[in-house]
Image (cartoon, rainbow, N blue to C red):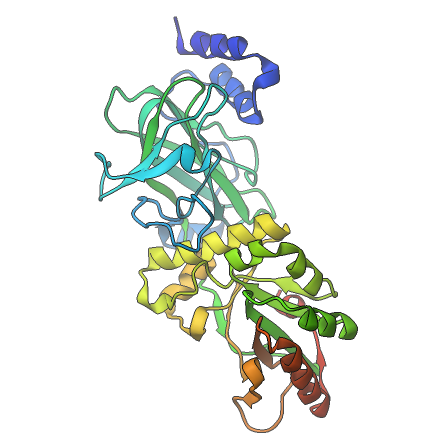
Length: 396
């Protein structure tokens, strides 16, 4: 029996009503491909001029599954990836990886699971990328969705006969798209599979811009508040009473502890929730790949919680290097922001001569002193003839 016949039989056996959207795409695949090993390149637009001249790099996060999960990461997560079945299905394994010391091992739980694992990859509109991965198992798929210029057939294999096999496909980012979803998955009732050495090859994005302030002559100042472990009603009242536009930089776990609070304190026009890493680690002590995990995983967690992807990254301890700027850009960040004034924990430090100036970024923290810190910052802004404004609209 041919592969198309076997897959069609599997679809019929499961019943259309029980299949997720993923099964529908696989049904299109078996109708349109002659062989299972490697998908044909998409017929998308040619690469942009910038893409043709930029160095090609691997944009995948934790591509070799060598980075362990932080204790502050999403429960049961594989760094850089989000797996539909969580730790019940997906985990890192040191058993016979394709290279390095570990790989991703997935055992779909139940007849209706494909064990899908996905990650968000930042892309440039109109640019063509090559995605590849080494896989082991039966009926393993690699594809990209949710930002391509047209449906792109995934690469897949019927069986790797116990060894490792490389899958490769290509996709072109749609006009206006800034991200795609890269996915790997198995098939219904086909058993476990493994993945290693994932690549999304394309042009390196321009490194993010590092800035302590916003270049503007408008008489505005920007209030930023970090971390998020202490969410007091007093601070919320000050923010609401003054209709303050707040740029919050919460850690994902802190935000997940009280997401409604962060929605309320960023309700004023101009407010936003931005990226502050997963674990508040000094990023300059990490490798470029580890920095990318810290930034991209925080972005993904905050996007799931609040519906909008961050575009500004605040490095913990204001510690950053050239690798941070590139990792931030790989995660879709345009700005790596520090500050030029600190009003945290009762302080009133302005790190330049005189009073607050137009475009200054004021650092504060979600602590039990925040209500008073906000009042002092408001008073300092008033003395300087400045008004709080929304940061994100000035950094577009």
